[in-house]
Structure formats: structure tokens, C-alpha cells
Picture: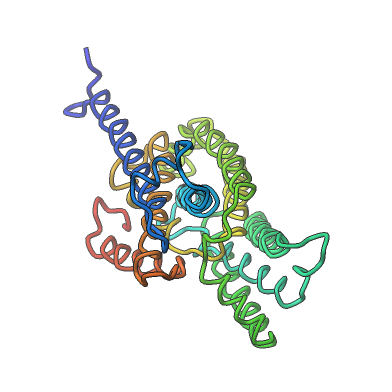
Amino acid sequence: MEERIGNYDYKADTRRKKLLLLIGALIGVVSLIGNVLVGPAWLSPLETVAALLRLPHVDHGTNVIVWTLRLPTALMAIGVGASLGVAGAGMQTILGNPLSSPYTLGISAGAGFGAALAIVTGISSLAFIGPYAVPFSAFVFATLSSLLIYSVGKARNLTAETMILAGIGLSFLFQALQSFVQYIASPEDLQSIVFWLFGSLTRANWFNLSIIYLILAFTLPLMLKDAWKLTALKLGNEKAEGLGINVERLRIKTFIMISLITAVAVSFVGTIGFIGLVGPHVARMMVGEDQRFFIPLSAIFGGTLLSISSIISKIIVPGTIFPIGIITAMVGVPFFFSLILTKKRGYFS
């Protein structure tokens, strides 16, 4: 006999949510394949598939295009989008605010300032640091931004309102510092800073991918382990504590994982907005607040949205890869406003 509460069929609803996860994953795979197929150099679908399968008759040039350029970029889009989707979902849950995301709470702004500082100071030219100077500096300042948000929140008993206000304040601070660095930068450095801030997947390589997917594989299961507690947190602090949940510890643990996954993701690709905001909202429209499904579906939609944005960035100007940060804003803003105006299921109430 199926479990029912009034007219609500729990098992049927669970099956529906699992089906949505499967459909979302399939759409993500299709977007990944499409991202590999699209590029400035024309390759037929048969050539691309043959190169992916490492068939012996494929010429060297095609293998280089697919395995060195397109596939790492496509996987980077999925990995970074999934990371930002998970981070946005976690932030919106622990802070109880649908506008929370790594971009709106200043973590991305901290990464942007760190990258700009590394470019202007010239540490990327040092032999022992090399090409990872900018990502490392971005990671450090994104982490610092997270620590500052946590410190301010800790001083006020980790209230969600305090952490949100601290994040907004830090966002303005780091944007101001970033503007100052751009003001004193040379024309060459300024060009590099602006390019980094636009966001780009072209820096993808197999080493960067391994780090991003390793962190994602580490944090996602830990968040899913606390899925029941995070779902209970949506009922409010008092009710969650009444169920035996240590709300402060849960917030700290989740915030640490969010900070880690965000800092790593943005350090490699630059400032990319709206993925961590829109992805979770799409997932919430599909499965509600049940964190068992909400968190993984946020990852799926985040990866899919960034993958689709990557495809658009390749075809919007033929022969040129358009900055993906601009694409995510162009796609995200209209969608976000549509969510605000429709107010489906009271998400913004």
C-alpha cells in the first residue's frame, strides 16, 4: 500500500522527482555533446564522435581539437556550472534567502580583486608560480571573502540577515578595490584584468578539471548527507532545533563547503554571475525544497545552463569565442526577472 497524506502520494512524488533528475541529467549530457561539436573549426558529428572514441583513422589535428580544446572546455562548463549551482542552493538554504548566491554575496567579487591584484603586481611572471598565479590569488581572496562573511556572522550568532548584509558589504568593498587596481593598471594589464572579469572557459585543461571535479566530488556527498537537516532548516531555526538539529554547526559546515567549492570554481574561470542564482531556482520549481533532490538538480541545471551559455558564446560571433560571463548575464537576467514577476509557488514571498 502506498503511503498517503490526504491526497498527497509520497512514493509517486518521489518517483516523479527521480525521473526529473534523470531527464535533467540527460539534457546535461546532450548539452555537453553539443558543446564539443560546436567550435570555430568545422568538424562533422561523425568526425567528433570518432575522435572521442579514439578511432585509429582520425587525423592528428582533429584529435587535438577535440581532446585538447573542446572536450576540456565542455567539461569545465559542466563542472563549474554544477559547482556554482550547488553553492547557490546551499546558500539559499542556510540563509533562507532566494537572492543568495556566490555572486551576490561577494565571493566572486573577492576572486575578481585577487585576480586583478595578481595581474597588476606581475607575480604571474614568476617562474615558480607561472600560469597559476592568477587562479591562486583569486582563490585566496575568494576564501578571504568567505572568512570575513563568516567572522561578521559569528559576531552576531550566525544570523542569516547578518551574513547576507556582510556579503553585500564585502561585494561593494572588493568591487571598489578592483576598480582602484584597474585605475592604476597599465593598458596591457587592464586588458588582461577585463578579460578575466568577463569570465572564460578557454583556460580549461585536464589539471584544472581534475581539481574542480575532485572538490565537487568531495563536497556534494557531504551536503547530501545533511539533506534531511537542510530540509528541516527551511522550517525555521526554532523548529529545526526542536528536531534535534544543531543549526549553528549545520550552517558553519555548509558554509565552509560552499566557500571551498565556489573559490575553486571561480578561480579558474573568472567572474560568472547568475548560474548560482538561476540554477537553484529552476531546480526549486521542479522538485521543491526537498534537499535530496534540490541539491543534485541544482548541480545539473547549473552545469547545463553554463554549458548552453558556452555553446551560445561560440556561435554568437562566428569564428570568435564571446566572453561567457556576458552570455550568462544576458541569459540569466531575463529569466530571473520572469521568476520575480510570476512568483511561482511563492518562491520570493
